[in-house]
Image (cartoon, one colour):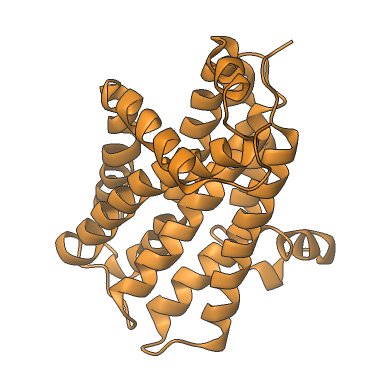
Length: 250
């Protein structure tokens, strides 16, 4: 019987398998690595006449893009493995659900590192994103956001029966967070009910963390809180995802 505790060797083997599969899918690689950068460049020229408007929105999107793209790619990739029967065959081997979930998190976390590094580098050095704090603090929040997106994607894939259904979860899971995270309007100016909802959504803390780096040269208590909330949310959703992971689509 497979141990309930994750095995480092099985986790690494799962991560390597996922990365090998993604290496043969150039469209997915382009979605992960190039689309966020191209959207940032587009936004830069949209605000070309008012550069001060680019900084707060650009910093916020550095937190939103990793979460959104990793959610989309992870949910579809996991569902594809279930519908093809790969997931059922893997779980019939000495491979536990925790091994599989952590392997996915590790593989997509590695891609998220490249994605976040590329997007942050382009934003700060090529697009002149003006931040008061360290670039590394921006990168940390971006990585935590990507892991959260991976965790959410793994979780919702358990409830979808097709790739089309997986994509349909975006309006339900991502769009409400996008509207209430403070990107379009300050959260404290929203209706009390909407503000209360925004206070429990992890994307709100991702945006707040990015803006803390934008405005403060030092690590603030609010930044630490934001990072802990995003990271804790990712860990919690990964645990729930492991509990709800199904072998196959019925």
